[in-house]
Length: 361
Ligand code: M6R
Image 1 (cartoon, helix red, strand yellow):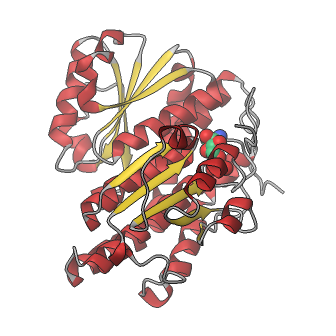
Image 2 (image 1 turned 90 degrees about the vertical axis):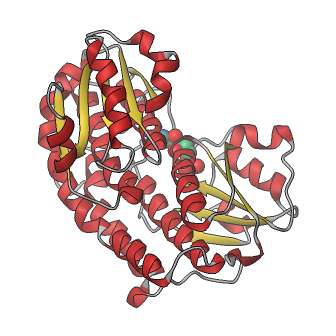
């Protein structure tokens, strides 16, 4: 039933082109953006708060970049286990979005119940009959299909796709993008299933690097802009599966402390499409290399040409709209965790101490 795959995780990684296409078919039938109900009308909203745990939290964090840049709406993100303790002010002009694969995570549910009655509530869920879906004003399905491996993979990219479409809807409602710009962003999202499918081809190359990665005690992930939350997600996936200590940092933050960790034993994985921020990220990467750090650069062909020289490894990704690159670069992040875990001999689908659904606070 794993369809020839050794692990559920590898099957679920491989399914991403097809489930992402399902999300597009659902929310963009005939190329027309379609969201159910009027609860998702952004005209009367002046603030969005997004709440989730783990990988879902990183989806929210990526979406903050999209909603703020495209729709010019302020977005606050928080982990569910912290959200309600500071009694955040909420009003009827606030849209609170709760993101959960299972729809049963206790922290997220408690945060949602705190917000209930104070503001509008939408959820982005995989399990349509779940408690979180049932208790929200509007439940948006991510259509990823059943996710069995404890590590979230296809649910992450499907969450991102739904949230990206939501950001485009928000931009359209609020009139912050021209019709041409909206069309361009929709076209960019529509091209992602095919690009993700091409990105899956980097698996064997990552496999070749995995043995060396598996011998590290600490690994850093760097990203800038919307790639910063992806760096956090890459680090979470790696520590969850391989039990190697990993941290994600905003590239520019490295020099404010973490650079003290760098020596030849600490691999640094730089996730950087050749976008407007590329030069700055590359100068951060060079600071790492100057201190003997071993850099794995994940970039596109132009980025590899400009900055690949002297890196320990270069993973080449297809060209994509830099804004939506986190969807594409999620693939190497997942594969790095997967192959490193196999090289270490850990239990890929059922890592120690973890459960698929965390139903205690
Ligand atoms: O079902 P949920 O999306 O609410 O679960 C949230 C987290 O527990 C989950 O994303 C966890 O971090 C994953 N194991 C990460 O791979």
